[in-house]
Image 1 (spheres, rainbow, N blue to C red):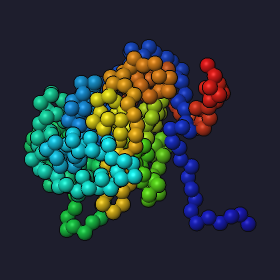
Image 2 (image 1 turned 90 degrees about the vertical axis):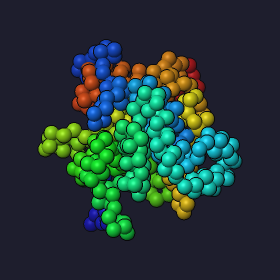
Image 3 (image 1 turned 135 degrees about the horizontal axis):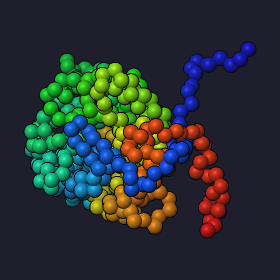
Amino acid sequence: MGRRLFKELERVYGFDEVAIVPGQVTINPELTSTKMTIGDRSFEIPVLASAMDGAVSPHFASLMYEMGGLGVLNAEGLYTRYEDPYSVLEEIVSTPQEDVTQFLQKVYSEPIREELIGQRVQEIRASGATCAVSFTPQNTKRMSPMAVEAGADIVFVQSTVTTARHMSRSYRGLVFSELVKALKVPVVVGNCVTYDVATELMETGIDGVLVGVGPGAACTTREVVGVGVPQVSATLECAAAREDYFRRTGRYVNIITDGGFRTGGDICKAIVSGADAVMLGTPFAQADEAPGHGFNWGMANPHPELPRGTRIKVGTKGSLKQILYGPTSRTDGTQNFMGALRVAMGMCGAYTIRDLHKAEMVIAPAIKTEGKYFQFAGGG
């Protein structure tokens, strides 16, 4: 008799286990378009900077917009708790590693100041940039209208795991369909990793779904609570929900893969998996202009009872422009992300992001090491 199992486990895949198959037709990279839209907002590149205090400040959000993308400000972070968040950032960066989680818990226990939400939104808008802000579900209903009134163009609702049927003790929790009608700006919600939850979220009228639970370099959710699905499989499943929902309703909802990226190749694989855009944290925390000065930490890090993030030293790798567009002399794929994306699109014969969704992908666990003996042996 065969083994008896309490559960059947499905094999799922991350970025390092798959490869993109070249197309039958190739095109010049300069003929490709990397444009994306969120609701009624258009962007030149399908890249968002994550709402992490070490990655996105009001100034960095403005720079991201200048570069064609979108920086999302954590509207519950240091920038809305302190009149001068930059001195607090300096303290976080200089605190010894063994004391940093306790220090983060202390500085994030300072209450959010509602007047600072509007002030930070206005700082971003004053530069001419599209302003996107992020809230957790418990604060969205009360605080997001203030941000929109101050000029926020897009609202993100983010927690480690979000569903359309969240249960809480409150008499009436956050109802996304009501939020969308009340705010009258694009609303993006996350994070999720499954077809059914993505579908239910889309049916509430939101404009985008963030995909990913715990893959980020500064996030320890997978270690602390054991929850998560690798990003390729999670994106494939949520993208299938988008396609079915689009066929059924004629309304297109963006899939944005959030977290776990290290290289341009990872970005290309996420888009071939069905992502319309990607959200990056640590790669942007490595920019010269990032507020964390070479450090990054997760949004769940300061949780008073169960921190699920850690401050990590990521170093600085170059300017934001170099990370997105080059030029670069690095051979590890950690700079010139848009150059990598355009080259991959050219190899697959994809003129647009939607075209790249049609490219084939194969399971290829040895894709990073096949024939690379001399790279690992220190050879030339």
